[in-house]
Figure 1 (spheres, protein in one colour):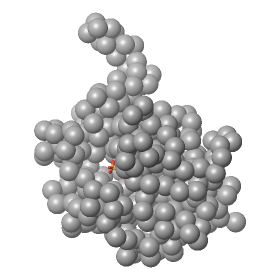
Figure 2 (cartoon, rainbow, N blue to C red):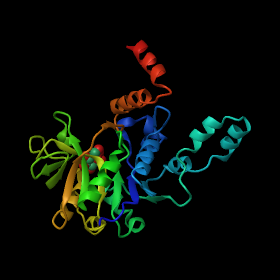
Figure 3 (cartoon, rainbow, N blue to C red):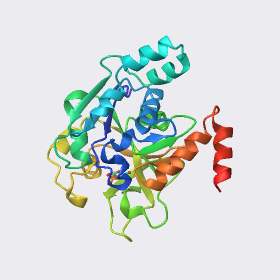
Figure 4 (cartoon, protein in one colour):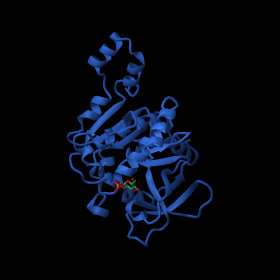
Length: 289
Ligand code: G1P
């Protein structure tokens, strides 16, 4: 039986160049989508998938992420004293139990593969999830839970994929499949940022993975690839020589918050999805159009 997936790695050290100047003093994954930071949604998704421990790969200047997931005594006391218990509950909603989050400094921006490798000691010898927090995945059943179930069903490494927008495949990691039948298909290859016209399919790696721990051994010596960075995609392709990979097209909608219009779309979509704000949000949007 496949081992339980208990831990998730969240690489958050990126510069956020596409969402500047907002990301100048606020880590990009701490930017708000409607009324809470992007990371709040990702943690919620992880918990819904049974994740018990989150390992953040951070860089200098990202201390606000740790502060967000800690108590906020002055404000909590003030809210309690004023009887504003609903706001208090919201302030506390994302807190972990002590010991359920770890923060590792990447120290140099060498690429996604290197960021994931930085988590090796904290993950140890068990399968784990990788969640790219730029990508918010809105789904009835949490996207990562769908991936965990695919892992439990097959015991294979799982990469969540979806069709790339027309003409944009070269911006992503792209997978090659051994035929397509339903949402879960065995992969035969993958390539990071293929040259336009050479993409093996239109399915891009969209930001949720379940990986076996053998990936760390490969990432340790992984050479630089696309963009001069140590790529997770290249590491996974290396692991594919000895292990199976399955591509999962999850059921739901992805919002790329690493880009200004994507972030705007996410704000609108998540406001409209909130039962307590949907009507007011719809009115406000209608009035603007
Ligand atoms: C990373 C991955 C890529 C994936 C993408 C999804 O690329 O390397 O395979 O498709 O995230 O957003 P990046 O966005 O860091 O260039």
